[in-house]
Length: 375
Image (cartoon, rainbow, N blue to C red):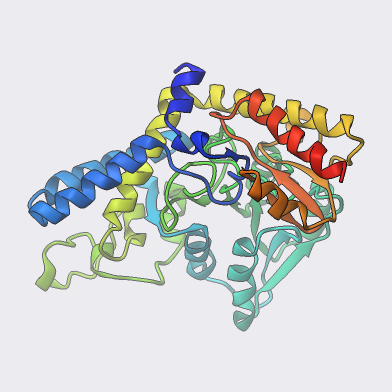
């Protein structure tokens, strides 16, 4: 797809410059159209087309699996990242004294499900981090014979630090530790392959870089892990003979669908599928290259203004997030009034452009920033 064609998919470009995909993203035109069509279908025909909906749901499952290098049987739909991580945290047969290792700069979605295990005698072991970076050697130091899980974000939410999933996965495989990844800050921005990285579990909802609606995401569990994670939340759809309602055959499905306990959020799944189709059409290699190019351009402009870059500038540690130190919170309403979306928190301005953004968008951002700095 040509850049202009991609840009035409996003009506928001007519209204504002959006550099906040690490927060909640606008949806593309095709996703809006799918949601509208589904609402019209249900309004006019009820469930008459239910079999067709389920066929489409399966295609979305296949699409998400393709994006991450998994099989459809290893993928379940979840309402958010927290649910996916909680499936893992609550499904392990923990023993008192065991521990899980996590960096101390994670978004809370990857902290609280593990801390919730304290009642079972499980320790959440926090790795000290500095300057937004996760030090591999500190992970090694934190792991011992009682460690069951390393859970980490593919990209850290504030600093944009990209963790070396290949190295971490190899380490976990060698130590026979479960490797769990919160991928919400990388899926849709960076290429990822769960098999290449020896990832056991991955979770991400679709409302950030995947350009979809809130409340729907994907969960991956390696087929070898299916019998090691017990489904804590169980419903009729978890079972092998789900649509034989009155038979009460308590036998879990043989694949990841055992974690889909009830009725689907069908409309959101179809929206998710529409957004995923855009990435397959463009190609993730192209998406990643474009986002990194825009990041380079942003970093160059920030440096020209003698502002302090917070994110790593090493290519293998970079992501779609560019952050610089800025303690004045008033910049947020100033930018918003001038129709520019970004995040300001923890003494940082966080910028997260996507594939449809342009260098002209960046130039306009810097014009507004210069106005603010000259006040």
